[in-house]
Length: 114
Image 1: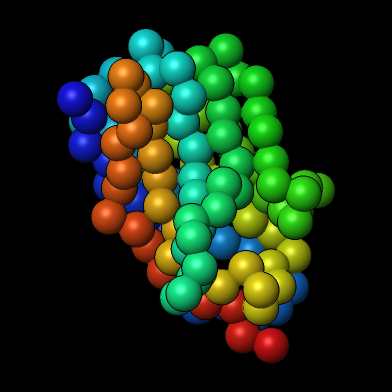
Image 2: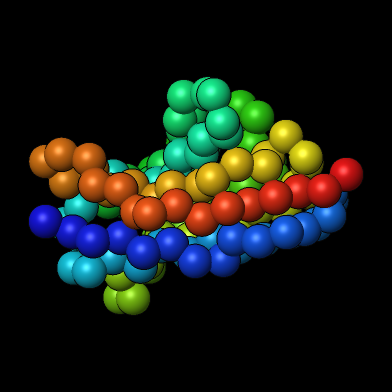
């Protein structure tokens, strides 16, 4: 079992940057995949970025070149650096861990104003 706590959300103007962090309650080196989804009202959650135990990454087309995911096994954290933010990036961002089943954080709001 693993608990996930996100931090770093907030309000930013278009073109700005935010860094989200996800802290896990256990050592993450054994967790196969971790990453971030996002969700807006009335829509399904969509995958933003993921990173495997050996640091292979995957990004949604809409964020490629702007977002960077990283994991720090020593700190048990997974971060999402978001640059060149757009209003359409506004959403609640959820950290997840695939560890037998999916575990989710509580979510953090990101709002990008135009």
